[in-house]
Image 1 (cartoon, rainbow, N blue to C red):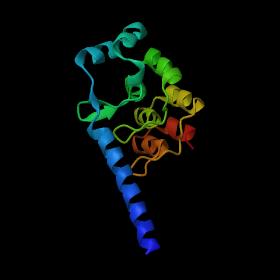
Image 2: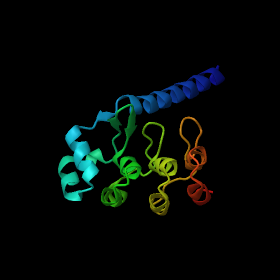
Image 3: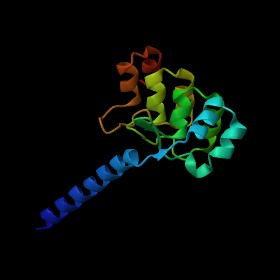
Image 4: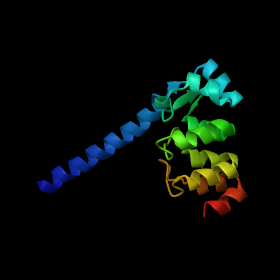
Length: 151
């Protein structure tokens, strides 16, 4: 009888975790056109006007994907915003749309940014729901310079 209760708890916890991961991507906040326009300028003063500190760790929906602002700054190589967020983001390993900022750096071949993320404590062994690490992204998208860094 105790094994059944224990098994029910394990199943319940696993189910709740899966739901929270799914909901994270499903309920990502939309990024407005103005916010995206300002983000693309890499102007830190303007960025701070349209994004508040509690936005730094949210997932934002962009077309069919979602990114947190740190991962988005990596993807578009917005260095001013990236450096600012690197010092002000509480969860450097946050996964949105099944990718952490380090996985995004590996996917798009952003070597300098990947190195900065690693120095700041990004977990290169972190796996997404598909069991992929940042190194797996580097291999998949043929970014050999990052494959060596992510050994």
